[in-house]
Every structure is written in structure tokens, then in C-alpha cells.
Image (cartoon, rainbow, N blue to C red; front, side, top):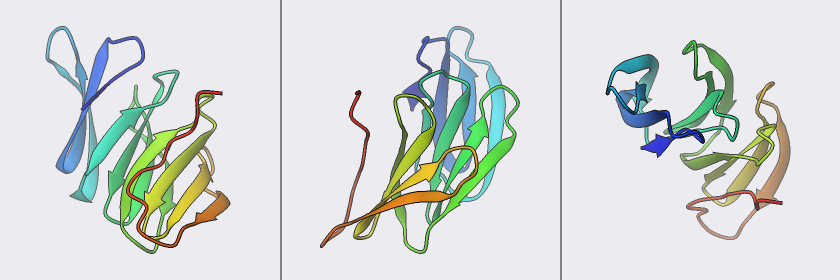
Length: 126
């Protein structure tokens, strides 16, 4: 689970669904439906989008409407995903590769190859 930057909402990940909740009332605000297990979910720095991780994809969603905005398809299992500090890019971690994506178009911008499994990846704050 992850809080929105303003602390007003929470996103949770479960089997075939990520849920956006109102943190005060516990009311479900949005249901982000998937075809497989959702391993994790996180808000963008501005709180307007959510990125979710499924076995071979990461998905960018509009946090307010629940509409899918971009699908980041991978050939191997995606282990984590995180937004850049400006929210323009997403980094995903998978087997021997971290990929940097354009969060709007879903296009790969850079491939960062490793000699072994990449369990997680993140951007530096600056």
C-alpha cells in the first residue's frame, strides 16, 4: 500500500485489482482492474496518477477516473515500478534490466542492463 503525496488517498494492490481509497473514510474511490495479480502500486509525485505492477507489465492510471493511460509491456517479470520526481518517467525493474519509460506514451526511453536479477529500481530525488 502507498499513500498519495498529500496523504488523502491510499492505493492497495491485490489479486486482479488495485484500489484507490479515501484515507479518512475508508471509501473506495477507484477500482483499477487487471487480468492478473497486482504486485504493487504507487502514486505519482503529483498524486494524479498511479503505477501498478503485474507479472509482465506495469500500468499507468489516472488516479481520479480509474482510466488506464499507458501500458508498459515487458518480456520478463516486472518486480517494481516507480515514477521519476517530475512524474514524466517510470522506471521498472525486471530480470537483468531496468527500463526507463515515458509515463504518458509507454515508450521505452532507456535500457539499463545488469548481470543479474534487478529486484527494484528508483530515481534519485534530484
